[in-house]
Image 1 (cartoon, rainbow, N blue to C red):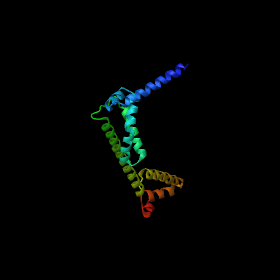
Image 2: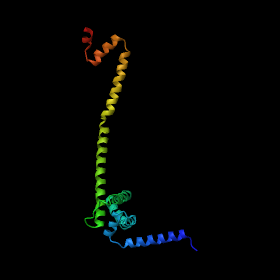
Image 3: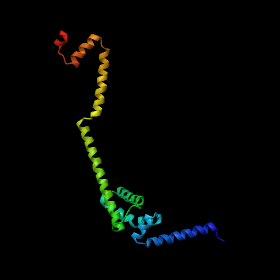
Length: 176
C-alpha cells in the first residue's frame, strides 16, 4: 500500500503540472490578470514566454550579454513589484519591449552622467588643480612655517615677519 504522504505529494505535483499546462494555454491578458492578483505560476509562464525574446532584444541594444541579462531581470522584478498598479494599454509584449527600451535609455543616461563626471575629474587632475588638496597642503605648510618662526629668537622672528609676511624692504625694516 503506498504511503499517504507520497500519494498526497504525487497528486499535488500532477495538479501543479496540469495547472502550468493550463496556464500556458491562457492569453497574455488572462495571465497578467492572474499575475496582478499575485499568482506566481502565471508570472513564471510569462517569464518563460518572454525572457528569451527580451534578452535577444536587450542584447541587440547593449551588445553586452551581462547587461542584457540585467535589463531583463530588472524588468521582470519591476513587473512583479508593480503588478497591482500596472495597467496594460495594449499588449503585454509591447509593454515588456517598451520596458526594455526604457531601462536601456535609463542605463545610457546614467552612463553619460558617469562619463561626464569622470572626464571632469580627469581634467582637474591633468590641470593639477585639486583645490581641496591644495588648501590642506597650504594650511599644513603655513602651520609648519608658523612653528619655525615661533622657534626663532623674538627679534629675528619680528624681522622675518616684516620681511616675508608684510613684504617690507630691508631699508624699511632697518628704519623701524
